[in-house]
Length: 189
Image 1 (cartoon, rainbow, N blue to C red):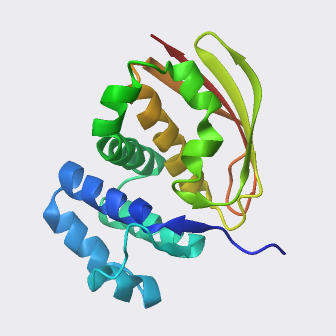
Image 2: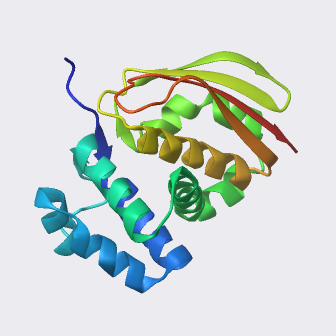
């Protein structure tokens, strides 16, 4: 079995900040207190650094705990990721938006993804005006919540670039233990 992927600390910190903005400080505290093991210790002691790399299983544990404490579901994770990415890139995308369309941005998904995930491969299967089909593979250690988090991040990038009415449909993979996902994205500008 391949080693699980590692995610940058910016994922953890951005998600926790988005959780606090969207659900309140009390929910964030409950999540931090409920996290078990090493990840719980690291989060409670603010030892997760933005540029550090952490096991995918830690991030999955964070997302599962958020679902429990926020009384949410996949849509909660997706929304938090979307908001975290929008906040992360707010300044950058003001400039990039002048030169980059949503279509071109999604074609650069691999480059953007490497900011958040150590490894994995993203292929553009097809691309057209207001649509793109992506195939992601070799994302070992991913759960269905992590896939919805990834989708929310893509949506955050698209929204920052002016895309509207974004829909995402999982065509294959994307479940617990799946190291692959095939995704169809559609939007209008």
